[in-house]
Image 1 (cartoon, rainbow, N blue to C red):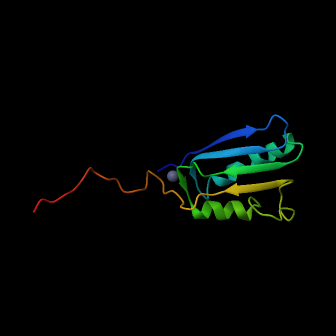
Image 2 (cartoon, helix red, strand yellow):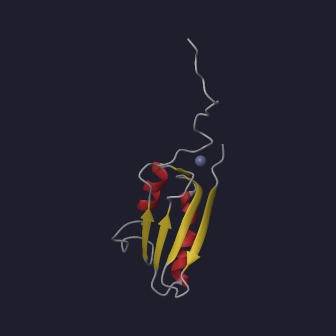
Length: 113
Ligand SMILES: [Zn+2]
């Protein structure tokens, strides 16, 4: 089963903030792909602030979020990391499970008595 990560980036016209909307699947394997994009945003922005919004993702792995945090995403003190600006993370309360992995519901299985 393949997890596809899709990202939409919105950059403010005044170049102060970028917002990355994560769609699709965010896993430990593919979350690394966000880093070059974040770096590129930091290079474009005058006041490097990037918000990564995963609230519309289809699927989020806890391991993926942990990996992002280890890389410095969503940390208040980001100076210890590789990233040259601040990068916050918006995460939904309930992490969505991959549609490819979730059990399918076949209509209703009701047993008449
Ligand atoms: Zn998935």
